[in-house]
Length: 113
Length: 113
Image (cartoon, rainbow over all chains, first blue to last red):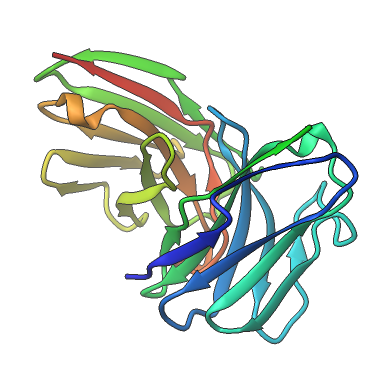
């Protein structure tokens, strides 16, 4: 299994600012993912972050808006840049452990005012 | 072709009853089909998963039925309990699961005592 610590758990931010979300895993993992989940909605993949390579973004998400770092096999960050109220959501970090089982952090609840 | 369609959107079941949630997919390259359970304020957690080489998998009160020709799979929760009240997501992945997950829209299950 994998235990994921995500920080912050929640934040309220002013529009136009940026927030960096941290994801720390208790074991080395190759594949990490960042998802967005509107309250009461499904999970939408933002990007795949593999150590040693550039993050791969899904359609509708761009690096300038959601820059990702993956400096080692246990840590990643997602930055939400130049925030607007539309960015208010829950952001979830996920990793693949035991080859195929995806584990999720508890999420970061972001409110942009 | 990347979508996974899930129904119903919400479900109310009496304690002891059977909960059934259905999913359908289009992409025949999908070869790993997990179900995730999510409680409010928590990240999703893997419940059970199936691969297309079997038509059914059972773990305790939870059973996945898989119909490859129809490109459909379903989750059955036997003897449903109030503690099962949560949101359930089906998902699909390629490369045997060593890849990103595509999630269904989710089903909010309420089990009444």
